[in-house]
Image 1 (cartoon, rainbow, N blue to C red):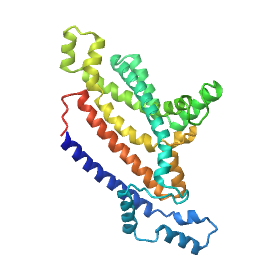
Image 2: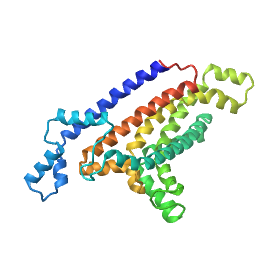
Image 3: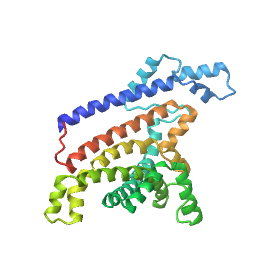
Image 4: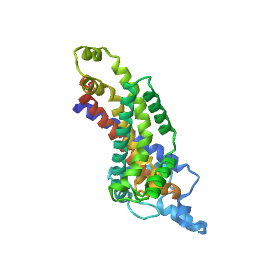
Length: 306
């Protein structure tokens, strides 16, 4: 286990290094000028050049990247160009909201998706199976901003059950979590159905049934631990996605997460914030995949970590 963790940590460090380099290069070659954004449209050329020199943007790429890596070694993500605040402070202020929304979305997509997949697999070929697969297809295809606006209109405006937007209470969390969870539920239901159908064909399932075990015991004890393994791997990927890829949902519901922070930084070409959010999201993906790999042997002891 120790050797496996060490190897994965080294791989994670290399992956994060690659992410920072690629992101830094892409931001470097962008035609947008951060110095011009800071100075304003009416600023003179001399003012823009002075700001560029103060920020070190006039230096070659390798010098700028080297300074950035040096800051990372000291756990320094830099300062925002426009807000004049440490990037780590800005992300830390937004991180609790994003983590809360991420947990809520994962709970929703698992509760909805796994239930649909199990029912579809148990009624394979029937009307319930076909209906649930149609619902999952619609869930995967529906744009999140459309789903979010519809949920807001029905449950917040028309029925008045939930607040229109904001952050702070459980009622604020429900609608954005469902909006995010619907998309994942569509994928999970289809994957769970396919995985469960494949598992139910195995010899050990037939043996369990031949021993006289009830359907509930067969499904819960023998089938589920093997069928759920692909789902565990997908959750690790979803963690990184929910950490940064939920800008639309956060905007619709006025949710103050780091996705919205990243979108604002992209509009203003605030490079330190973009780099910081990208790095945090990459760390979330790496950690999520590592946790998923560590959980897999607990579900299925046949899996060995190497």
